[in-house]
Image 1: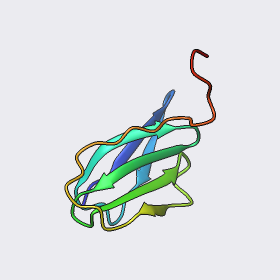
Image 2: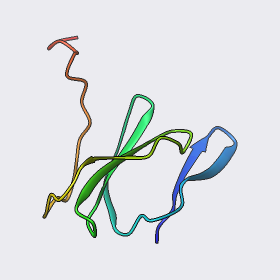
Image 3: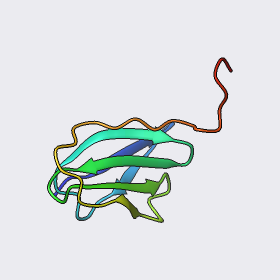
Length: 77
């Protein structure tokens, strides 16, 4: 099991502390942290307060990285 730790100024705490088996490809976008769990082959997210954890996509094998982008942002801005 792995732990995600977030640093907010002088505050430090666990963001996710259960059932994260093999995390890779960590990305931060807006109020969420996204990661791939290689063991379960899922893409997951949790908000920066450690709440609202959810599976974004399930059963995707051989992922090694991910990037979070804002699809509403216009090119050149």
